[in-house]
Every structure is written in structure tokens, then in C-alpha cells.
Amino acid sequence: MNTTEKITDKPRTLSELANYYTVSLKTMKKWLSCQTLSDIKFIKGNYYSINDVKKIVNHLGE
Image (cartoon, rainbow, N blue to C red; front, side, top):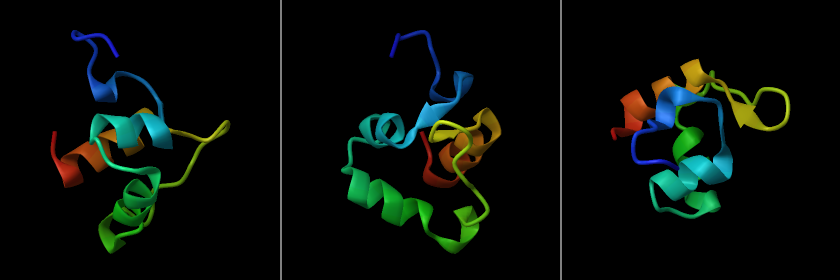
């Protein structure tokens, strides 16, 4: 990821989010299974939409 590019600039995969937060995929899945983020789903191609990524970042912090 470029230094000028924000995590919320484009749709992201689960592994990109896990790398951003420096956690394993298992931990990231567990974090995303919380009640607050339960409405977030993968979009086509196993990506999270930009709006979903923003919700995740708002909940987990930058």
C-alpha cells in the first residue's frame, strides 16, 4: 500500500485488512464477527466495499 493511499480509498480483501492491522486472518475474522459489524458482508470477488471498510476502520480505529 502506498504511503499516500488510505485504507479506505478502495475495496479491500480480508487479508489486506489483516495486514493493515497486523493480525492473523483468524483474528480479523473474529473481530469482524462482533455484533456491531455483523451487517458487513463480502462483495463480489471477496472484497469489502469502501463503505464497509470505513465502518470497520471506524469501529477498530486506524
